[in-house]
Image 1 (cartoon, one colour):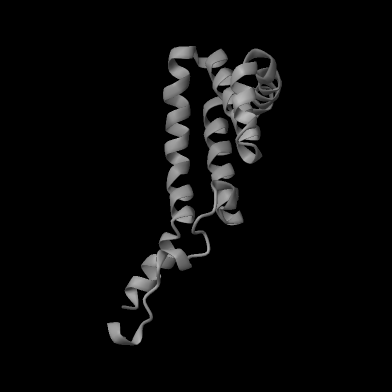
Image 2 (image 1 turned 90 degrees about the vertical axis):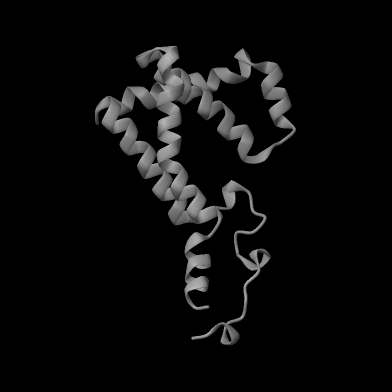
Length: 136
């Protein structure tokens, strides 16, 4: 097929255009969760995941009390940010408890870097764009 027979697609026409990260495709969100859970399992074992997530839950509940100014500012953003902020702090603190504070950030960063390709692929709809480009 030649370029004259294909309608050019604008980025604005993509279904994910302008959507927040919470608007990611369900398959991508599920894949992100699976990658993250696999990393936790690899680091702490199948049984070790249970106390890890209990710890995350307890620590994220304390965020509002420990960081009232930050939590108050976060309320302005609303939505998913209000949920994710305490969760991320809970994960960081749970890792720090097990690995030491100085090691927690590199570990968490490594986990996010493993999840990022899935996020970016869904967010930027790489498969749709590449599929479109191959028809040009």
